Image 1: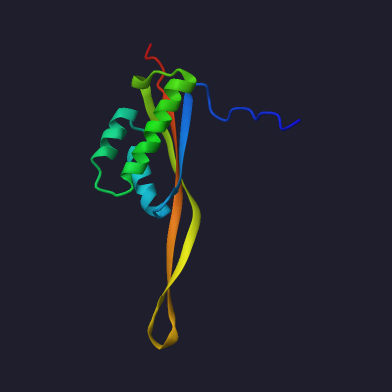
Image 2: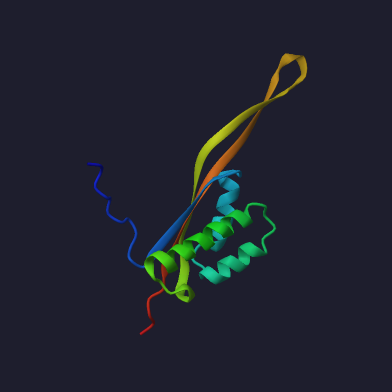
Length: 126
């Protein structure tokens, strides 16, 4: 028995990759996502490679995975790919505490987030 397969949510010229449980706040990750949105895949990779942000390495790996998915699973041309969407979601939060004066505690939250990158093939310029 089992479930019937769900229809594909993306167009035939699109591929995606999701990096989950990234140890960074969604607000900081969204700054990187905004910097690559709309750029060609190659220029986005270059920007992430030379970024000073710690999480840029993991975002670059997710972008490489999306490009590989486009090439291997959907037979898209790698040279014509661009980042159509890059959006960030919030996942779990580790809650820790630090002892403070007079028997009180200071709350420490360690947020995790995810990033979804959708690449799309540019149309032919006619």
